[in-house]
Image (cartoon, rainbow, N blue to C red; front, side, top):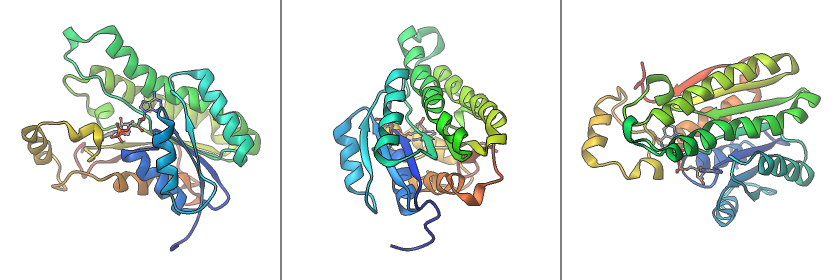
Length: 248
Ligand code: NAI
């Protein structure tokens, strides 16, 4: 075990925390000393993730974040099992890409309901306790696509731009209660979500990244760890791109 454990004694929820960027975030928060509740649709995957985390007390929960009632239940279960939640990372996200004229209602709804409504559901469920205790940090994982837009991703871009408005509004509403809310907007990160892209498209994307490489989940996780902790105590309502300079 190395380094300063600035989240020792804190309870953190990471949605979609079982793989990709979310798994990287679960590791980073556990290394910082937090007890991590890994929330995913697939409980077995969440349990596997928990087994690999540093430290004790971490737990797996299954929940579809699009379901408000299920979110309230998860927050209540985490609170009664581990204590009050002081860090919430809304990372669960999906894509259903299609060109505008072919985009089906189901593709639009699934993406908005998971990426945007899901974050709202979790924030609403978790903030009552944070406000009462006057302590909390919420980090929403958006995307540079929410800043730039992208052909074929109108649903995804709208959900992530919506997250930016949600982030700033929550930040303004809760700042006086010492509850902070920020967003991290990753660029192109190597995970299952991007693994299926054709090689030509990856090369083209890479050519637009000043850093000259794709990001790794750890690149995002380190920033989330910082925002979750006391070092970011005076930072709220910010959208921080972690993209190797892509969206400049
Ligand atoms: P991934 O597909 O590897 O993982 C997504 C996670 O979200 C999985 O654990 C999945 O179980 C969970 N999830 C999906 N729908 C859910 C639901 N309804 N309820 C609960 N959990 C659900 O994706 P990746 O790449 O790790 O992405 C994580 C976040 O980062 C997403 O919000 C994504 O939009 C965002 N992002 C990813 C980028 C990339 O290049 N990979 C770039 C910018 C943003």
